Length: 259
Image 1 (tube, rainbow, N blue to C red):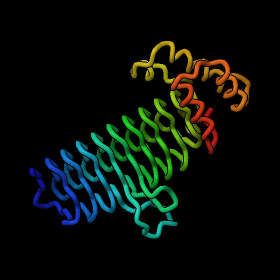
Image 2 (cartoon, helix red, strand yellow):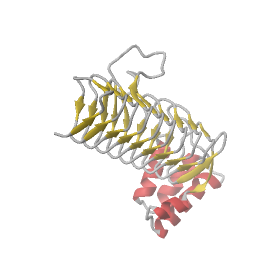
Image 3 (tube, rainbow, N blue to C red):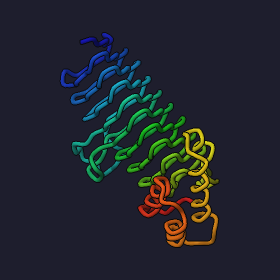
């Protein structure tokens, strides 16, 4: 079994370190941490608590993962962090363990790119292939679905959701759910249309995009309530996978929908 652990790194004997893992200078790995194969911790990385890092992740200096949540109700309950495969976690990123008030787990999926100073708070759930630019900040219990792109200096309110393939512009404050496939921006974020360029880049057909455009118009650009618009979408548009996801996302909202 091949591992490269720098002589200045402090690695607990109760941590589980996979094959071909590189742990650089001044890293600290605590009890109960699991680091899967082919990971690289460049230097000065601290990982604590019941934290699992999936294979092939690269973690840059001064990132901290698995520390207690910034929640005054937290009393040391046994909660954790689970991070998937092939993630790039850049400098000064913080990912906190969950609280007992959620599901007990802060989760990050696969193939995400978290740029410098990103903060993922307790009980957040991040999907796959998400890009979060510098200083994008999530409060507790936020859900980010797959293929979301978030600009720099974004703040997302607790319990808010951002739907799949959405794009959020930099300097935005997100206080309500952002529907899948859309673009949003602003100090109090509002919608600016369908994320057409992003959808094309991900291989969505013209037919699918045109159907989503119709749904977007019914929901957000015509004088209807969300309930009326959803009813119209269900009766007038084809029941594609994307339309089903869009409808379900809006029906499940609790904080209101960004419009």
